[in-house]
Length: 114
Length: 113
Image (cartoon, rainbow over all chains, first blue to last red; front, side, top):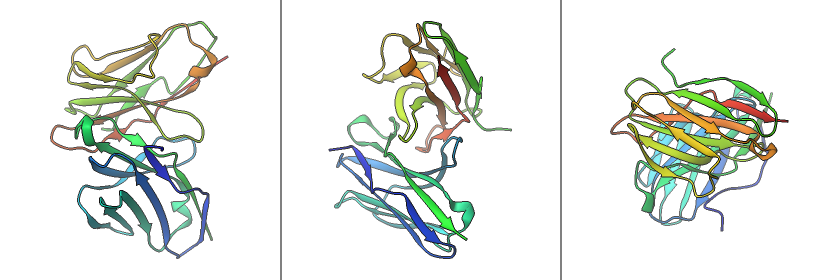
């Protein structure tokens, strides 16, 4: 089982729609969960972090965490063409500690159609 | 610019040569991480420093790879006797004391011919 798994893509949504990106992780002791956005040829940019069960909202982005189901998701409301990118789910903590390495999923590519 | 910086941004080398990359973290960030990313994959952890101490090194990392952070500020990553399989984007990230977020630099793209 992969440590961090993101559902297969690519994902295509029309402009203005809600994009839903999902991620599951295997280490039940994981403590911190992050979403990074990566444009083609660029480095990952942190867009959301979440540590507790529930929802966390920041502008058009909402991160959702369910530790019992080992599931974390990112919702992008009112999707814009500029949101077209690869979104990486990353997890750390667990046995390695809160300041440890990030373990990434493969990413999912989002395309927002004008 | 107060973000993480990396140098060089691109490096082309021939198989068997040694290469060295530099990372300057965000000022006063005490933790520094190196990752490697290949096409279609998420970044893969290589090593991690807290101040000048190297606290963790990936088991996947061969002994051709070495990293230093001698004064707890900038860090270097050296790859000896490069192989074509070393071709990747090498990413550096830093993190401040008391926070868990990691902030990435622009990366160094290595091509081994």
